[in-house]
Image (cartoon, rainbow, N blue to C red):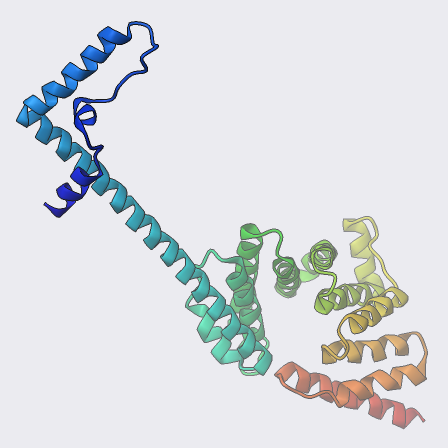
Length: 316
């Protein structure tokens, strides 16, 4: 009844309004048309049933519009809450990753394996890979996690080709899979991954990790044994690189984000060693050894750097 009263109050007031809309007086046949419109209006007002049906139709139309507005507003609120929820999860995941809380990170993100969000998926790929590289992970579990990580990274890239991180982690996961598919596949994968790394750098020139990974690609091909080079030449257009190229990328990564990664420090030292620059070869492993060990990988790098420095001492 309140709704009907509200609708009634919104109707035009006055006798002419009750009789129906008035046509412009200058229109052709205006007299006859005005009479016709007035008669129709009078017919509705003179027929209680028709008037009730007209009023009911107006009420239903208004009710439908009100319902549409409520649903639309609810959809906006739901979408906003969903975005906020995803951002909250991403913040938690990044905090756990930076803190070295690997198991908690994987537990958190594993709840969203069916997600369609690229940002969640590439982080899940990263978490799966990190768990797989822990010393306590069995070889069987590691293999499953490597392929699982690749699947997440692939889905992330399908969902958002503009995500530099999706390109980066897709390439990393392809490289990992090569360890289980034989030397031919490993070389093939190693050749393939340079392009997504370069795409990642193109999308985000300030991502030191992507630049570092191109450096690793160059270093790997520079030190590739002769028999692997032979296989590579059979498969591809003789992919090759040099230690000088690798060194350039490692330094570039360090310029973008100084001391961002203990492995970059170590590889600077190892690359200088390959280039027979012993003075600089000793400088960078020292920095790697003194790097704060937040993760298990950092601890491994610290040990390797210490061994490398011990080797220098023995030779001197």
